[in-house]
Image 1: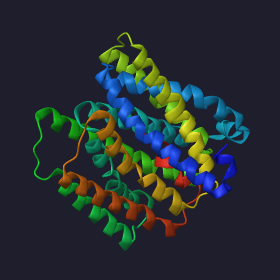
Image 2: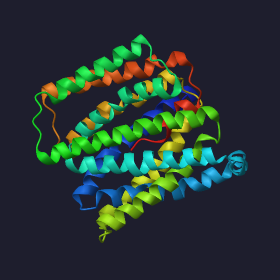
Image 3: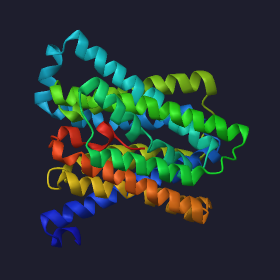
Image 4: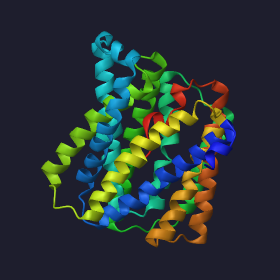
Length: 316
């Protein structure tokens, strides 16, 4: 009722804010699920396999994309498979594992480092030269990250979590550049790319998780968390985000998306008791501002709608 009374533009803003909130709550739900003894890789595999089963019917309804499938070259198929392995099997697997070792705010900040890696990869692989504004934003992010972590006092398990998170950052960064390349080539509509890569990567991740970590009996809480993450925070949220992109500008989408860097630590503090020191909070704010500047600095490149899709596919 409330949304129906808003203008189309205001409704899109409200919907986009809802999506970022849902994506931010994912971090809290993942931490709760991990505390409930769901193995990290199995947990991630269950989420994205179930989400794929929800998105597949939507992708199949888009006939234009389905008709393009027989015309895909071997190179296109290889790129899609590599994207699936990097974005889901490696990046999402690493994210769930790192959340098993580190606070949500710490992993959230580390994943922001992907902006630095993507900038370097974009120069090497796509010929995309960052603007001075973007370089300034990247530098600001590094300053914020330095404030957040200084002095570096990590346990052995936390070091393992940081290394795992950075491995996920590298995989996510390469997949981001590869996803942009596929979208620019328009080999398939974004929904088809998402469904296919999520299916391949998610199912493989589930197989690896069950093989290496097993599938223990799940409590009702764990089942509810997995179902909510897959149905609402992944399939529904992704679909709704794409709806908002039809109305919102790239600037508006970037600013709203960047709110997650603040939402995640706040939710982790409220629901998980993961409090931040004043220094860490300042570092996080500086880093978030740097990432926002990077995103806004990209806008003069006149990105297409496909290239503006969240994370080139999805957020956790």
